[in-house]
Length: 109
Image (cartoon, rainbow, N blue to C red):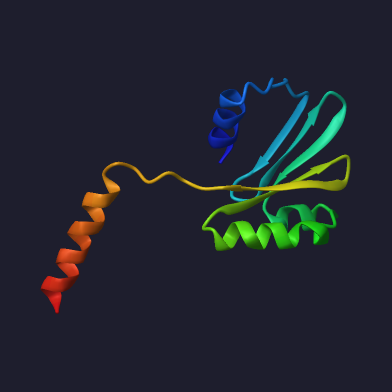
């Protein structure tokens, strides 16, 4: 997820800043301090566990999930600030792999 966010920021010419504190909890989220501001980025459960109220972002998060995107929540200085959706692009080999799996499934019937 982090690589996708950084790649998108670079594509959009968004300046990336260094952080003075960084903590990551695999599969849940990150905590960082950037320009003296506390930033949380991660899934709904991660932010809620950090005491962040995300109720105002849940409709948008649900919309992203329905589109097959992973909702990623962001809080700034203890308050929910944004939610955005991340989706993987299928690899070129994916079509071949799916076709192969369908053939295997048909063969086993």
